[in-house]
Structure formats: structure tokens, C-alpha cells
Amino acid sequence: MNGQSSSIRKTAASFFRMSWAVSLFLQLLVSQALFAVEDKWQDVERIVAVGDIHGDYDNFLEVLKAADIVNRRGNWIAGETHLVQLGDVPDRGPDTSKVITLLKKLERQAQRDGGRVHVLIGNHEAMNIYGDLRYVDPGEYQALRTRNSRRVRDNYYETDIARRKQANPEFVADKAFRQQWEQSIPLGMLEHRAAWSAEGDIGEWVRQHNAVIKINRTLFLHGGISAEDLVLSITEINEQIRHELNGGLGEEPGLSEKPTGPLWYRGLASSDEEIERAHLEQVLATFDVDRVVLGHTPGLGTIVPRFEGRVLIVDTGLSSYYGGFLASLLIEDSEAFTVQQDEKVPLPESKEGLLPYFQRIAELEPNARALQARINDLTAPVD
Image (cartoon, rainbow, N blue to C red; front, side):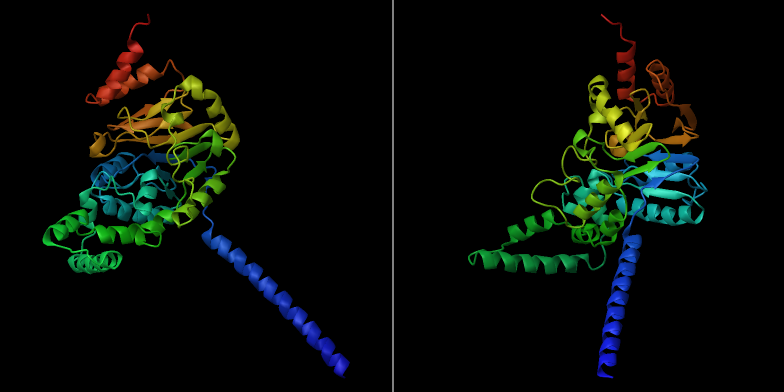
């Protein structure tokens, strides 16, 4: 009987060990499903892409209305359209919080109707999470002020003074120091830092997104893909950047920080096309796409096609800070158009089509001086 009991105990122990392993495996699967972020889509009939917003709610809303994405009340009307916002929502303008509130609403409404809103991570999102506040507009702090902001700042001041006195017992905080300290930390700034922290309301929302996505045969990202990052897949890039934004930076600059990283690289947007052409071919082949769409590099007040339309720069300077040029990219049935001033202008796929395209946009945007300068360059006699 004792032998039989021992056998039963061993069988039971083995069963429970196996059950625990199965349970753990299932938990891991569920965990991966919960935290996996989709980054590739196929068979999307209509795509609208909008470049850097930089805190300009009013201009962003006008662009969305012109592209038939929202109605006059800012509600989704685009059905199964995929809207891609290419990063740099914050900084330089005062309305970042309003823009994010709108984007969150549109994410919910679009998914309900079978569409999608893809808000990509740009270098300014990363900068805000890391605490680089060089470009934060004072209005962004003002927007996050509450009735408790002064008390919050006073408490932080007392904590800071205690820390300073502990480090230097002879430290004295006089009236001039207090005044200078308060100027360096305006009301709302501490709330801004809390919201943009990795665990904060905005920081967590940013970390739910991708830096790079592929829709049909088009690659979308903020800055660009450098040669050294071609060894990484789309998913590897996204997972690494989300990891870094969640406190995973090392001593060396990470993928989200380095000048050649996907949030910062400008080679495809501004380097000489003949020098960069071989690299572009590698990018297209590596990711199996026909076109790359980028933000990050404002310039001509419209969408700028490069490499015979295989690279499209959609940072039009939407924000008033950059001139307020309101345009979006429309991709329908693989054909690309600029939507600007209520016009739908086909984007050229040849060098010969570049000048007529720019001339048509200049008729719509007569105040785009950089665009006119480019036209002058293209029409100047060759020596």
C-alpha cells in the first residue's frame, strides 16, 4: 500500500508540475498578446498621412477636415481609412494636450468603424519623456496647471532646499534665489514632467505606439532608416525604442537617441539623391516596400517627393511656428496625392514631373518662399 501511495504522490507531483508549466506557458502567451503592438497591415484601400504637428491644434484639425478624416466637430468620418501621424506632436506650440486628447478620441472612433489611427513616435516625443525640454512652449505648461499647482511647486521647493542643505550645510536660499528658482520651474511644469514620465498619462500613451510601420507596400516613420539599422526588423526597432522609453537606456546613445536612429536620421530627406540612392535601394529591398514616407524635415511648405517619388517628405510645416502650410498625403490604390488648399494634386514619379508639381503647388501657396526658391533653382539655365 505504501508503494502504491508513493506512486500516486509521484504521479500527482508530476501532474502538478506539468500543470504549472502549462499555466506559465499560457500566461506568457497572454502577456505577449497583451503587450505586442501590431506594426504591419495589408489591403488598406485609403491612407492619409500627416506630418509634424508641434502643438498646433487648430491647423491639425483643419488638415484633418480637408482630408475628410473628421467633421467640423472633430469626429471620425473616414470609415476604414488608416490615418498615420508621423510623430512630433509636442513642442514649439501651446496645444499639445489638446492634440493628444483629439488623437486618443480618433483612435477609439476609427477602430470602431474599421479604420486605424497610427501615431508614430518622433524625436520630440522621446525628448519630452527623457526630460529634454528645450523646445517646450510655455503654453504647454500653462495647459497642465491646476488649482493645486502652486502648492505642488511649493512642496517641491522645500524638498529641493532640504536636498541642497544636506549637500552643503552653509547653503542659504534668499529671496533672489527663490525668484530665480520659480522662473526656472513655471507653474504646470511639474505636472508636465509627471504626465510625460514613462509611467505618466502621456508617456504611457506614447509607449503604446510604434516608431516604424508598414502599410501595404509603404514604410512610414519619423526620421529615416540609416545603413547601420538595416540589420533590424520593423518589430525589433519598435520593441527597442519602447524599451528605451521605458527606462531601458544604457550608457551609449540608444536607438531613440542617436543621430542615425529612426527618430533622427535625415539622410533620405536631405542628402544628395545620387549619394543616397544605393542606400535607398537597400531600404526598399530590406523591408520589401516601394515607398518610404517620412516626417521630421520641414522645408518647402508642401509634400516633397524625392528619388522619383519613392521617398515622400510630409513635414509640410503645418505648425504656425513653421509657417502653417496645411497639407496631407493621400494614398489610394497605390497612387499618391498631395491634398492642399482643397486641391488633390498627383505626386510625380519622375524627375520630369517635379517642376510642374512644384509650380502647381506654388499657385496654391504663393507665400511659400522656400518652394519658389526651389522652382527658381529648377528653372535656372545650366552653365
